[in-house]
Length: 95
Image (cartoon, rainbow, N blue to C red; front, side, top):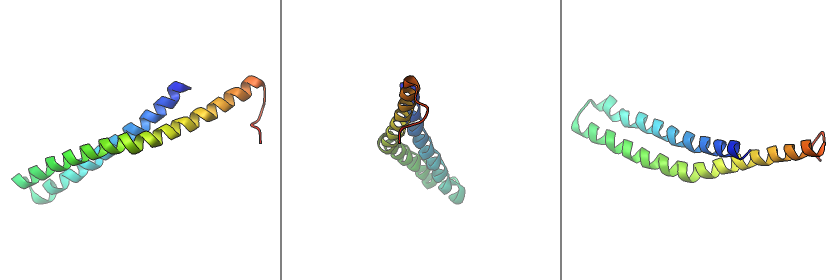
């Protein structure tokens, strides 16, 4: 159960990080796509990539950790309750 919980937590953090990087790459390509390949578009490209890298890393490490931990703990609680019910021979959850 602990391994599954940790897996869910990591999935949220990695998903937020990769999502942020994907948005960053798309946003960084906009100056190159509309402005051609000039010195200022190259600077804009790498500047936006750097910004979105730092932004997505910080977002994943703060918001992603919190959301992932809460989701993993809720699943762990549900699985633990189900385990206890099965162990004690109960068929349905108490109301």
